[in-house]
Image 1 (cartoon, rainbow, N blue to C red):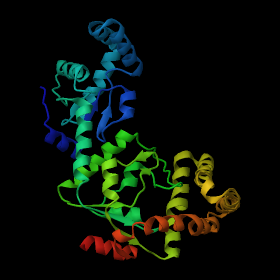
Image 2: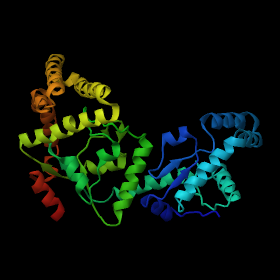
Image 3: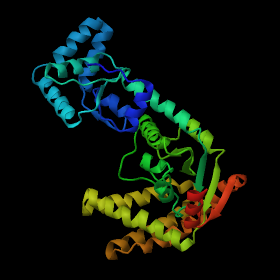
Image 4: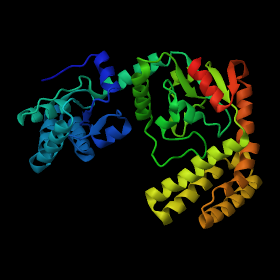
Length: 362
């Protein structure tokens, strides 16, 4: 059985998280993949490289012969067993390779030999990737409202909780500042875009506008697609303005309480503390040129004192000693300067609750 999905069916496949048995080599998968893809390669990286070299030097026939020789015996049986197990776990899914060519057809035929009929994606990952790009290009043309405000105003939380919100920072696994790193590694650019496309497709049927956080051109190592960036540069803005003390509480919870728990939970007590300290030091170091060397030294000293106190007592409010001046001298002036250039696009300003109410009822 060889089902050839139409472009519309491919969108449905992506939007419903239909499992994809991606039989490309790990190196290909790491360069770009779909959210619901499971990488079960026909050939590993070394085998693929050897077949590629053979193809260039001796032609297609010899390359195919080498491929069958490399993937044979126990090697072949183990891979078939992995595909069979996945097919049994996910009875509705598809096989895909790079372009829907030889590799996916081979896997499909080997599965058929053991009694499993499983369809493949015609056009492979290339077709899926094009569908994702097309979805971004089309769906980002819908009206966009940006949520702005200084650090600690809960912009990401609000966007995440709105039905028509697209949490770009959540998709990017990064909070968008020098302290934005999370324990989840960031995706390669293509994979980030694929996840964004799938998020848009999942919400597209029920929503006709998007609410996004007012971001820069990049979130960590991931760049926003140019078509989305162009739309955001002309989008209307609502601005959260919460009291400074409330902002501090949010930042304390997110950057200190939560991060130390995550680091210790992931690495263990001793290494977790070292990683947590490195994370905070790196955040300050990354903006040293804008702070100036003397101010960086002063704030780093306050950070070290706060870390010593936190490790001793567990109290995280001690970080306000360096966080408050950092907000007052760097983050707040920088954001207000950027916002001043967008003044004519501001539709509404208010507290978190007022902005949330306005967005729900707008």
